Image (tube, rainbow over all chains, first blue to last red; front, top):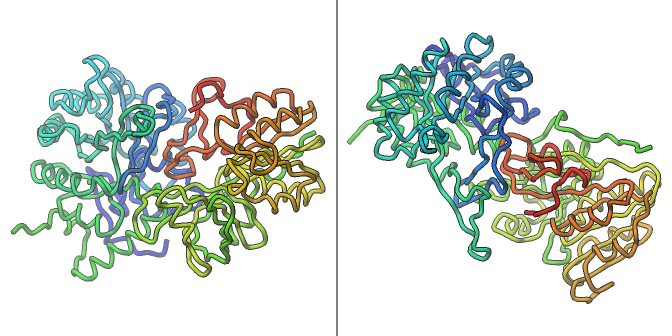
Length: 309
Length: 269
């Protein structure tokens, strides 16, 4: 890449990013699927497809459905499992220029502990991102992420099993307790927070009188959720001291800037990448143009620079 | 022995290109056959592969639509589009000179046959990848029989194009308005595929399930599947279909063409 990215550099909990754009977990595979469609150098990091201790085959299809400006999905966290990830997938990610964030998921504290310790000290991994949206099988299947105490416990579990920086990926399903879950993660030692994961949603085929997804309901992503995500990022970023990574329907440079202004130090691009794998490069042009027009020397000067009335 | 042509795999380079619409022609069932100037994709494409097409100048609809390549010749690719929703309606309204954003070529094509009779079975909108295949078979000096099924005569597509490259074209319509009255699978049964026949099929899932059943005696049966997908290149894992031996197959990177034996046909979706 001929682009001078020095002013686009950012830092999340000690992890250096050449650009503020991170490929969101679950939307960029393990980084090697794109075969020339994406200049990886435009990405600061890749958050790999969420990994569990054992492989998961995923949900009954149909798994995706388009809604107005949204993508409804219930993939079911299909993944190759941690051992196959380390063997077959990590070598590409470790060699690629973007930093490598490994997204982990579990259904018990023990699973989170085993995964984190398995990934600890492995060269090429720069950070763990913890998905807390999975059901907690030990406590009635309620998602870990909706309960501040469980979020704190998962955070402590992961932190004590690895020396890697740990980023908690919060779920909007925490609702009114979202800020509490963010504070709980911070107090439990999380190095960063990313939000939001998809929003619980469903759609119905009225002629067949059936849900459109095989899993009945799923998670909504895409531009439809962006203003909701922006407010949640704004609320959380104003309460915590650790870096916040904004996620939710970001599909343009304008959207990136909005999340940075709201307090994010970097952003994740997900659904937008599925549609336009070259989107990060287009976004960088727009971000640089914005910095030029506003006389901004460093990307970090945008973070939290929102002016309130 | 089965000869494999340059069967494209996910290892190959993909192209995202904004291409010019070179021509538009009407087909049956309100379908439109688009000719696109897409040299990078045309050069690589093999029968059975598809492209992901952006169906808007703006942001809605959000996702690209997967569309089979109906042929690739010199710098051009041909896409047959039926207006079923907002996206495909937008595509059908394109005029010569317009631009369309396309990613491809995606997925794996048909494995080309060795000796034996070649039977191409298409139901409804299943004809496009089989026309591409028929043309390649003709180029190779191999003969094929095409079975085309549709609801009615007015909804048949690519009939003349098929006739130009196949030894025979047999037609079935559900209302009897053209050819034999009934389903295209009845034609397959009547033809009673021999153990040396190679069957290639594309169409609705119940039709493919029936073809797979009839074809159990054939030497090979390949089916081209459809599924909703967000990316088309293996990142989203949205396009899963149940596999015969448990678990799932991914239509975009493992298909869309599969040996019929790999697919779970009971309880089709």
